[in-house]
Length: 307
Image 1 (tube, one colour):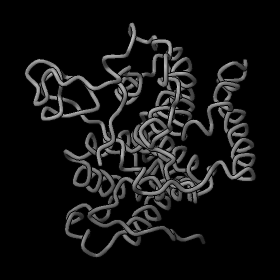
Image 2 (cartoon, helix red, strand yellow):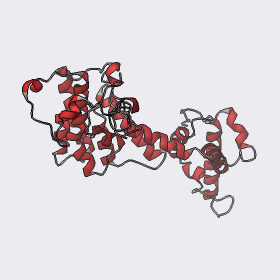
Image 3 (tube, rainbow, N blue to C red):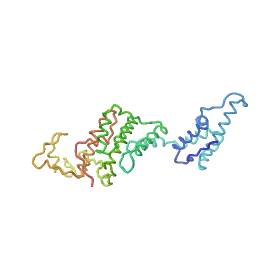
Image 4 (tube, rainbow, N blue to C red):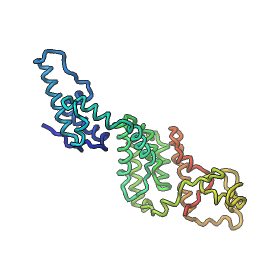
């Protein structure tokens, strides 16, 4: 006879316990006892149907008591002979007030996942996103769509390394096929690793770009003391790049020595950030999945290093 071998119920793991235990109950044909859908037949007390139900109910009660820590017994006083009442009591105690917060926490983890540690295989990182999506579906009944999952994966990838792959995916008719998209990204990862283009990013670079926002002009990339707009700490002290810039989105033609461009950490990171608007935004806008991070990355003003 199979036994429940998962983690026992404690004060912190109800969501994961309930999912695993009900999966076990299905193998025992007792899930209906816990949720109240398997009720005692109205036939005679010695009928086959009643005897079968009583056997399932006794099995369900014994399985549940064996699957919880002893500290949980205090919640079962008075209902320890009724599997359905025991389950409802435990569910009420462990879910009051925290279900919404747990769901939001999982959604936040899903929405903010970024592939920053390139020493980890991409398939493992994508597996984490898919696991979070599965939790939202199986535990909270609030699953993200395939389009949301694909958009999250694409938005989490480093640029410009995956720029070509994302452009190719966006232009293909199979761009909504999650399995195909993942397969294409894994192929691109192998190419990038063989060519040495995908390496672990130094922590100093990872923390260099921060979503700074000025409290004076409300623009991003600097703070009030460094603001050169009216009312800022450096009011009127416009930097050279600001005086030279043309209309929004159009760079002035180089003259004299201005055509000599020396790449810096700032320009490299800015170029990587702007690659997002060039390749990922069409996919996100098409599916109306554009978050604050995307809006931040499309600001025209260069991003300053917070060092």
